[in-house]
Length: 614
Image (tube, rainbow, N blue to C red; front, side, top):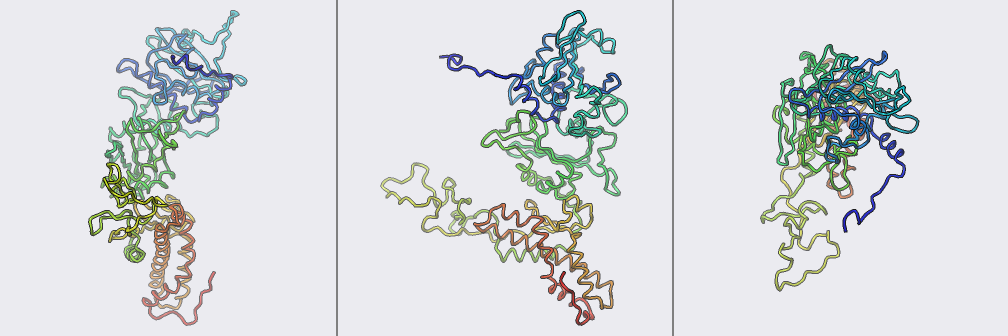
């Protein structure tokens, strides 16, 4: 029995509803990507040296409308009409792992209900189709030709020639008419929802297309960008090849994942503030980014405060405004773009959405030395943190927070981790629980008793030998300026612990630090050398507060050994909010702080001086 005989294909009962729902659900911000992808694919089919995509501002009745024009094989009237159907496949390969034809129309129509005008020149003849929404229906606009006939495809060759179009070679153009006649689709492509910046198109293209095929030129005509004249748009990889950035390196892992590290120093080297150096004469934004790259396109893009917040997990604790990290997956990596190509999803299991966080450990582990040096260069002064780290290390040693994983014991066998489900308990890995791979019992061996709980330890098992060196205390870094606090999102927060690079960032602008300083200065108001006293009090306040926060982190890490604490619980205990509460209760450390200051200050504080608790 053939496939046709085995099954009756499904039909669409209400095609208008299906088409409308497909269009209305599409993310509007995918419009630029889809239109540009179609234009690039068409231009690639033009002769070498003539593969061009142009972005234009077309004047239509005194209102600017955005146009994308490209070379490449043109379409005749019938093909142009067919091309405006959803999921058309003219010159394309259909499939979720390739480019499928409904994307540009579906992504653009929600913001162009008034219309999208398609024109294509084939062998000197220019045909035109307009797709739009009228009432509740999306479709092709029917033209009244004035002689009693109607149709949805028009021959506009004479009109195109009069407008200055060259019909001596093939080309195709789409013009975005927007949702309203008076809408400027160059400046406001989404009709205010969402609002657009002055260089919205350049930013969207720059943060999507990591590469374009060799030989294709993207030209931005006057009026479509912030600079003057006609400019060539270039992707990140094109600019890297032109040495626009100060430093760049790509590191490829054993799994074939390539991690790109890029450094764009400040434009103003003296102040270190403002734009990055690559902004000079560029169409593109100079903002540093992090993204997952797959098949030459960027997904899960992080920029601005999103990137500076997440950068520490990639090992970029400081300097994220100037350092970009891009994680490029091989073409055959088991991921898949979603139906509208806005996100990547893993091609298996629950098909979770792919995020930078899935690969941040790789980015951290593979940082080139120059990247590590730059991060240290941009880190604030951590003077005085060494003594604090030593104290925290001593506490860690006492609590015996072990590094993850067992090691061989004195008998040379792998010990068993006492925690159920931990490494070393898997019989496939040759632990004490393991059975011979050849089939279980040896010949003549008695059958072992079936345990009541397969996850319990067998008789004779004992705790594994642990590493002699315990986990190192976190590196302590201080924030002393408002700009640094904003960058690390620590306004109104005392500290942030970053597990990957094992760093504790302490905000010395947190109010409790200053309050403790004031209380100690009041207590020692009778000391003769006030300047020396204030300096010592400032140092003591910062040290005491940092130790309080650091000890809170250490005890939270200790909870990771408790079976009743999950990783999420430990994370909450080390959150900026929890660490802020630990800092607020500085009164329990006042006596120790006074004792330390008393040993350094002579004469001692006035008798009877008291500071009441707030």
